[in-house]
Length: 270
Image (cartoon, rainbow, N blue to C red; front, side):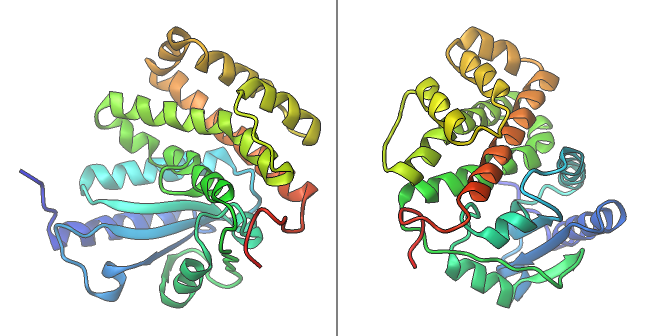
């Protein structure tokens, strides 16, 4: 039987989440939109749509990410509500290319969302219409619902449930990190390099400011399922792998937009 949360549980979830955000992370903006915001929600079926915007740059403070994950996990444990939150930062939404929201969505959010916690002034979402499926995929793998950042955001809640689901989500996130160099290479050259280690050698030359030591480790782990399973069977080592992968992906995105500040011909429709 499907569990149907009551209106009271929705209200309790939002109250706890907003209260904890205001108390512990007052500089993180939390906005929500959709049926709950508009008063159209069918309680027991609706999810809560929203976004969290961290202050600062594309390389996030992992203490903030972990703290937000703890707050969400606690709120979920008290009130099991379905949500779809995207974890963003002010630089990514300003650049726009690696934000998973396209222009129609970002315009809608700015007009129809409500900021319930944190600063509102100065929020700019420069959404674009993606020209290529590669950038669309890259942005979703970074900040989209199933992306690496959101896996980190929901990781502690996943740990409260089926461990195999948690381990699979971490594995998928790490796989996205390993394949990310190939996407960046295509965006600048139009060439596909499916072999992960070859893509790593190329991206190391193109974006040398990134520390790729962890990418060596990730590729080694992904090439040996026994090594991968050893990392995933322990929550601490699995989370370390996930957060290390997130740091690496963020560094690659920052290096890319710094080196290529102008929008490329393969990236978005102008």
